[in-house]
Length: 226
Image 1 (cartoon, rainbow, N blue to C red):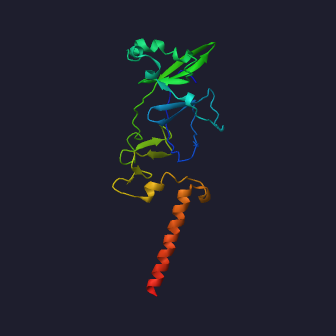
Image 2: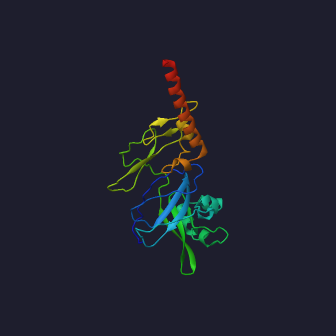
Image 3: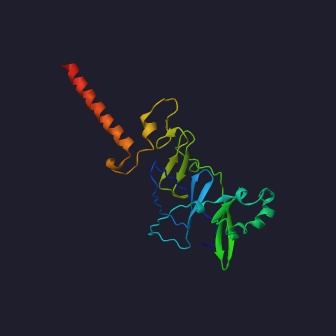
């Protein structure tokens, strides 16, 4: 890592119900990885000084990896003061063993706690917490879906992250207005790229019932003709 302005790249993955892991394939150089599980709920996942393109990284996210907002760390007089006065205190949270912080953030920064000789210090950089993800105005996502690309220049793939009640590769389908929809019920239970026999019970059961209904329909049609 050097003194260049940090380059931010973002991707998104859906974690199916009952699945405790996610696989991210990434070919671009990187040094720091944050995972945002909920809105502005960041976890520092990885810090590496040297990028190794062929390396496979297995990482478990722990509660201690969560980046706390400054309102959770400082008292109101410091947290609500102006940035010039407040930022002077940013090394202190990293030096408090009771907090056990790896990172924290304010409205415009993300800060990492790191060891510098025998001191624990904070390294902060600007971070847009309200970034608009629209693939630079070329988004195909519908119904307010966010568009993510794998690179700022010459992207090779893009994906849509849909808001609640919308689904599909471009968020083109809606579950609103339907009392019961099989897609809405089973959508997040289906584990992609997994053999049918390893799918959740509800998926296997729905498949069996669908096959039985189709067979019953054929039999009923044949008997009606006879």
